Structures are given as C-alpha cells and as structure tokens.
Length: 115
Image (cartoon, rainbow, N blue to C red):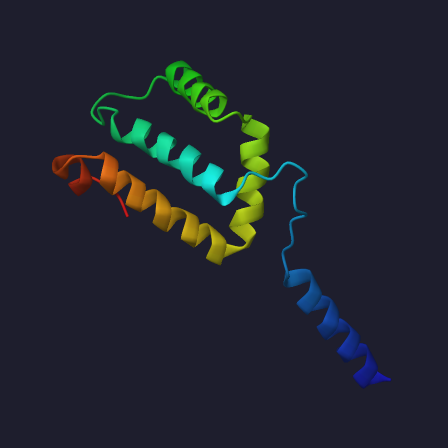
C-alpha cells in the first residue's frame, strides 16, 4: 500500500511539472512570428538608449507593428506563449530573427545586437 501511495505521488509530481499550453485557434505561423519579432527588435535597435523610452510612443509603435502584420497584441501573446513552451521552436524562430537583423542592420548596428 505504501509503495502504491509513493507511486501515485511520484506520478502526480511528474505530471504537474509538465507545462502545457493549448494551441491557440489563431496561432501565428513561425514566419509571422519571425516577421513581428524582427520588426520589434528593429524598432528597439533604432532607439537612442541614452534617452528614456516614452511608454506612449512605444505602445503606439507596437500597435503599428501588430497592425502592419495583421495581428493583435492578444494573438501575438498567445502565440508567443505557445512557442515559449516549445523552446526548440522558439529558439529556431529567434535564430531566423537574428539572421533577418543581420541582413537589415549596418555593421555598426550589428555590433550593438544583444545576443
């Protein structure tokens, strides 16, 4: 009986450690995520880091980025959470984002990229 109790307890612990996120109905494709994240990082890269960020301007810019990419903040967040749980896929997405950034930024800006 005692073994059975520990076996059940062990199974519960293992199952509770597994994090799952249900696939969103309108999941953004990997290509869409790459495009949006590239745009976000290009925006961040072009900000003068010595000047504090204006929250309203940043919010407006993010809204514009989502609009250009035909998505919403909520859809992006749900998709990001889904890909975040699958770390290999998210890593592949970020590798493509870095490739895009290297192609779009000049040499001086590339040196400022934070890997």
